[in-house]
Length: 343
Image 1: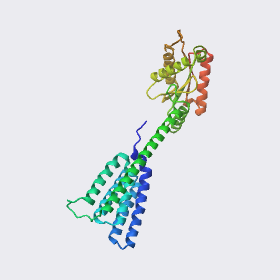
Image 2: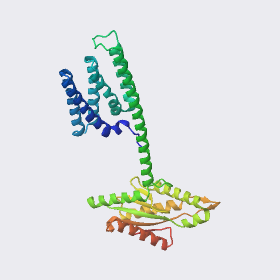
Image 3: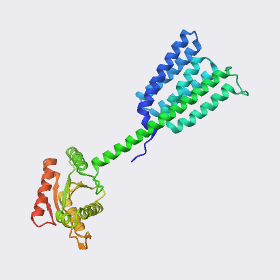
Image 4: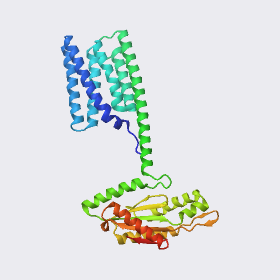
């Protein structure tokens, strides 16, 4: 299973929400500053809103999520320090605090942790430092304590929420992967199951209709499997099925696919194989199965395969293909087992 990347998880959801949310917040603060007669602040917020609008266009029109995220973060950090250095009003400090959860959501737990620590250190230096090359606003101790404590509380809360969200999403991804595995993989042999093979056959048939590239299938059945189960138990039967799946996989070409089709049946998909080629491959599989050396309760097990063959260029559709392979398998059983019959 591929590793879950928290940045990828938030790109399509939280990033777009953050861009739109910060756009609205910037406009609201611009309006508030305008009605308070603070035209410089209003212009500053509108500039932030303009950059975020540009980032939204990059996100939705060009689908450049990483660039949109970079613009968002750059705008928030520049705006944060711009307001911290140039305005000491309560509204400016409130806007600075809105950047904290957005940074966490846009960059994930680890990256944002280092960013928030760096921003906090710089903000502390600006607000309480004594030796600086510039003259920041004169913040009183109460404002500094409230702002920095609010920053820390927001940062801790946002990081905790993001960590919890990431864990839940990771669990969901793991569960989805497990469900997909159960849906498409046989749990005993670890081969594709019938549902998976049916999908592959349908895909191959649609490809055949477009480019007329023939393919064939083999339907292989373990002879006397019921006798092995009844006499030696299901554990012995499971060992035979597991070994047979491995034998078939090892004997096939790289492009071929073997799946567990039923209880003791295996389906083999042979891309680009004519009926003649499929017959040669089926004989090779039959011989490989007969050479399988297994025993149970001290008895040597006699293992063999009966195989039916069908090729799409001799059939009408998928149903006809499967019916032809089943008929070939039935004939092989009726003719004495341990043989190959091409339809």
